Length: 187
Image (cartoon, rainbow, N blue to C red):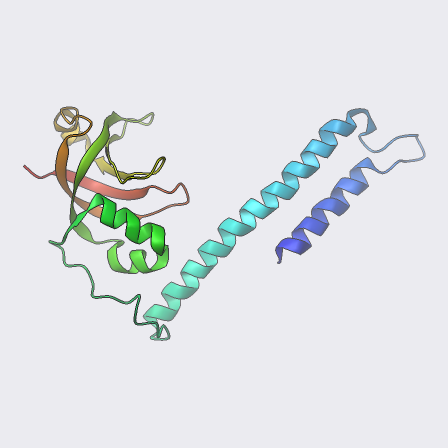
């Protein structure tokens, strides 16, 4: 389904709800402004959903094509990362920012050693222990999550402190942060 079809469907729904009836008003005429806002939110929601769906679908297609040998673009098929590879947080973030699909093919699911400067460390709202690497971006970071057993070691990390961790790359979800899980601090 295309974006324009969903937009037209949303507009038709909005018109049907607000169309005058024989009773003198639209189905929900008493709250016309609320219905207009609801209609706009529906349209925006459709665009957001399709943007997410389309990018997820393209990732699946590329991954399917790569595994079946149909991906002939050799520039993005660089050598796989070895399990003891070391990369800076800035380099990893830049790779994901430039091409998420190529970076996923190279790093996702692989255990790496990552180095960088700590932006923050602590425990999030869900009780997960984390550390964030600075990457020179105003909003996004490389986010490393740790098992509960590492909580006391992570709390000793300070902003601007250099650090090295090992962990498994989970990729870059739509939030824009590169995620690394099952991390441990390299002494």
